[in-house]
Length: 256
Ligand code: 9WO
Image (cartoon, rainbow, N blue to C red; front, side):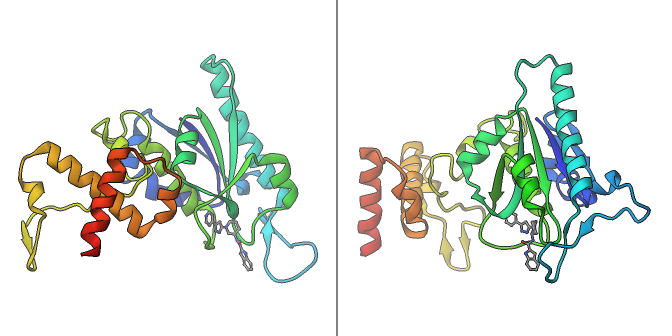
């Protein structure tokens, strides 16, 4: 994957590029990140990147011309790169991270992870001119109903989620297929040593070595957890007869 990131604060992305699984993916050829700073596209002596909103009021917006120049350069680099690799059709999706966007979920992460190239726009201040959204942005994405001081942390979250789905990023190729949400369900409870922690025991089935019993228990707990904590997710699923049976068992256990 090749991702262009438009940001006034590229240094923030060391949190993504220098640590852990995402750091390793960035050092390998699984993903290439390019940073485009609107400040580098200013033409005035003060390198101004903010501007006043029409209509007045407190606060500032991102200055339009340097922002748009950075976005277009980001997109051009991805197109040039795709042509170099003689890719047939190059789609560069441009995403703006904002609380006004459509809420992100696993399905959308899978969709984005399959794109070869992506431009992420990180807003600052009170945001960007509506016409820039209209002309330059394909979709607006939100991580949830809250406001940050800029789009960078949201963009890092998106890139991190995309990286995990690229082949070879997680040591065990199958790992991301077992994540929460791959089946539309929450994870089952997980346990490590010690076997007894502050008078709480690890569920005995997990010590039994009976793989079929462990799988049934895990599925039942996943279904039950989802029913308890995120019933909205269950409503979107077609459960198999086996899953319905396990969930009914969980409900019966829960009632007693
Ligand atoms: C700032 C502000 C200050 C005074 C009055 C109103 C205000 N609104 C904003 C604002 O919404 N700033 C945003 C900061 C502009 C776009 C980039 N920023 C951002 C992105 N904050 N939160 C996100 C975000 C992105 C994705 N998911 C959740 C939050």
